Image (cartoon, rainbow, N blue to C red; front, side, top):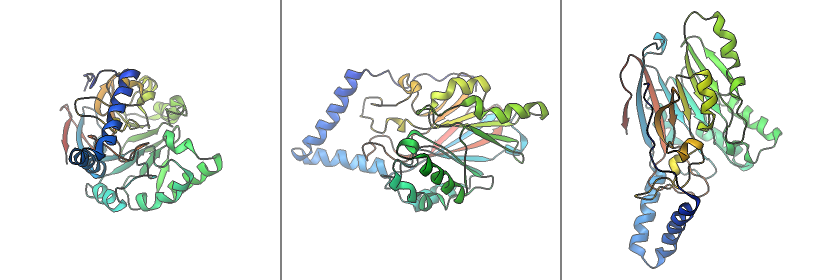
Length: 311
């Protein structure tokens, strides 16, 4: 797991971006004059928007705590409940059918005040034996006052989810730290603070617990690498959300995305990193060539390379 991933796509310039997005919009204006092709494009986008892929990973670590052998972490990201058309029942069935041991959400659950009441239908049926944890994304902060943000966080707790805002919790029964880094995209990330409890406890521990770090965006990677993590789970990019055939993503919204790291599993600066393409949509209520996903990570002790399958 010491390898460094290679870029997935070339950096896109501002001019070429607008050329591509202009072409995409032009195609939609042409739908009325080319009904067969238009129906095909919209049908493809509709299928990709409503499909839900299960990304299943087996990750091996030579010094994995024995309590974590065979345990599965489920990651959801970027639900964007303001426009999500995938039903709560479909998400619940997809998650719970895999019997995860730990559940996490890496930000961008809602975008507006009117979405506050949408949490319960989607999150109340999701449970895991060792807990549910959530970090905030940029959209979670976008239209909430401090008062409404408190209400929002309290609603998570009522539903059995623990928000981690630059904080960490130690799960003794798993020998596992869950480190929650607040949203990097809006400069709420304070990685040193998020690791403070872990660093304070190091002198009293005789072994090396597993370090699971959560953040909405990979833009906190440099500071995470300074402290170390065995797995960093992020989202934010949507994998581009709209990816024209033959092209890379139009927008990735992250530093690493500009370098070609906008989805999937990579090891960068010694940190195993997963960038989730998310479930919902932002700005345009469609996905094209980038289906929504839920990711599952099953941990093993050993030296095997990561194994992956999509269902």
